[in-house]
Structure formats: structure tokens, C-alpha cells
Length: 111
Image 1 (cartoon, rainbow, N blue to C red):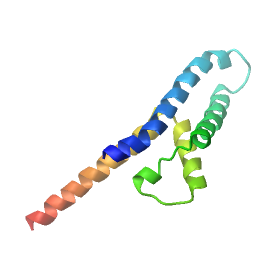
Image 2: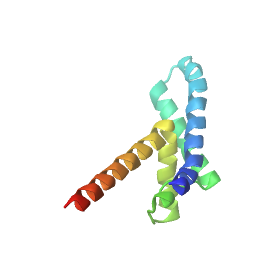
Image 3: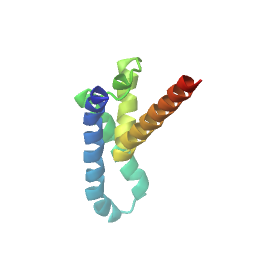
Image 4: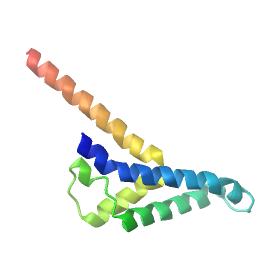
């Protein structure tokens, strides 16, 4: 589990930093006459992909998924663009999976 946290930590930090930047940009974008949600979404996506490619971040590789590095980086950029919520969703999923495996092991040893 330590290796997983170590692998996902940089992507989480990047997502957190991006989320904080968007909080700063939000009031500024509100002053111009554009669709604020769309503009911040595009900025988030572009910066998430830039961080992912620029820093060589990967969220699938630490999870044991072996696909082309390019696609892993794209998926990582999308997750980073969701801010902390993207990584939190992965961590919740891993927690549910871990609990499910424990329950299955417990059930199989009882029989």
C-alpha cells in the first residue's frame, strides 16, 4: 500500500495545486463575460494534461494497469484536472475493493 500511495502522491499534489489555482482564478473569470464553468473546465483540463505530461505522472501504473504510457498520461491528466476529487475517487474505490477482498477471504475461510 505504501508503494501505491507513493505512486499516487504526486498526482494528488498536482490535482490539489490545480484546484487551488482555480480558486484564485474563479473571481477573476467572473469579471469577464464568458461561461465561467466552461472556461475554468478548459483551463483545468489543459493544465492537468500539461502537468501530467510535463512531470511524467502516472496513476494507472501504480495500480498495476499496463497500457501504453501515452494513454496512462492522458488519463492521469484527466484525473488531475478534477482536482483532489479525482484522486479521492480512486482512493475510495481502492478502499472498497480492499474491503470486498477481505470480506470474500473471510467468507471463504468460514466454509
